[in-house]
Image: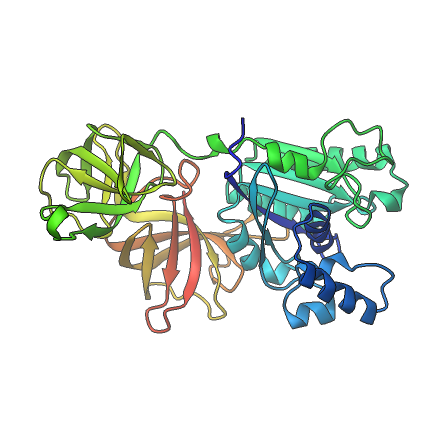
Length: 417
């Protein structure tokens, strides 16, 4: 049985005018997740534009530039709830120059919805977005073959898209790919089953999202607890309390477990696991808790509590798939701050190994300049060791960001290889 509080994050991607914003508008509209005043405002705007009905795309296109141009530029986040599940949608841009926006919108997603225009089939942009979804290790991909109304709801056109996508996706690292024929404009197979495509026996999109099994997406094997702060209340009831507060990144911690604190290597036993006004026997990702230990150990923010028989690597030299987010190009051997879980160190980019050619998806070993939207494999050196796992094994302890010290702007996001 599904926990109706379980949160599913999904991102949408596709080429320009494939109907991403319309699809999300349809999801919100048909699932009755829109406030009356929002609906009234959109209806008024639609009338001013001369549309016959409600322009569903306006529910997500929040920026003035986007509304005027009818395209999505920024990542638009939308929240909605059904009786079965809570959702966060990241509506990401389709243009090639906004690759970085897709990377940031998709980095925490459980699922990616990739829209394909039934008339055009799998195009370069479809491959590009699918590749990024694979690179970001998004566990579930739903390929929505949109605008079926414009191909007379043809099963043959739908099967052609499936064949094209499957031929390409065999090279990707995505294990769960599903296909749904839809018309976002008319609502076919979005929230309600389509009467125009009785040849399709699968579930509509919303039901697929509501019932998708995501519990196993979290790494439950490698216990990782990055310490965010040390709690020392020193009040009457907690005179000697010393708790280490943070969020469980992965795995399960239980009272009585033997743990090691990294990078110091000190060991101890978990004495208690506490939340506000209560104690627990165990904690698992992504719970926020305070852990106390049997021994008084010097632990501070940035340290990591792990199981003694299962430790991450402590490395100063790490290889990372890096997406450059900033207008200014990367500088080799310049100092940046690297943030990894609750740990912050100084770091530099030692070497650019290769760049991904986002057109051909091949590797370019000649061009070593990192500009905005470039994705590349780099070698990074840090001043002190980071406790890391590969991104493939653990999306939390396998991800980093680089920050420019002078401006405090995030310049890059990376996935540890």
